[in-house]
Image 1 (cartoon, helix red, strand yellow):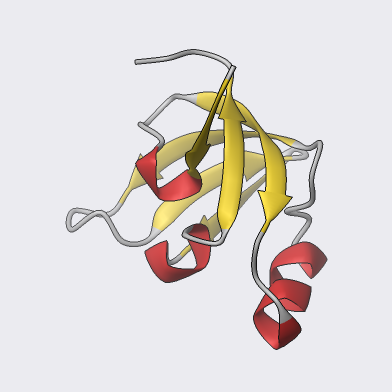
Image 2 (image 1 turned 60 degrees about the vertical axis):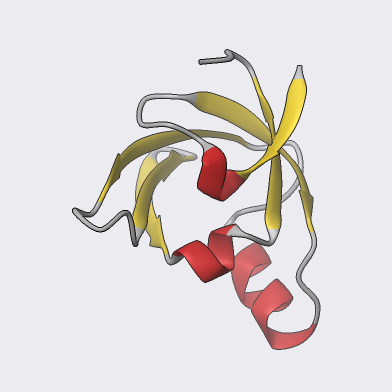
Length: 80
């Protein structure tokens, strides 16, 4: 498995969150949304200008801006 930044994931690619590098209010907000280490995520799609990104996690859909996704490291389960 390879660790990459969440922003680098492709549509329909899955992976497991390895770490959240954000501190303070942003870090708390990201973790409150369920983006915690060990959770499996899938990139569902991206907006036309690639921001925001739509994720599938724990049975619900979540969108993140790229500047938020930059703080999340993911172990990808399939390399594209």
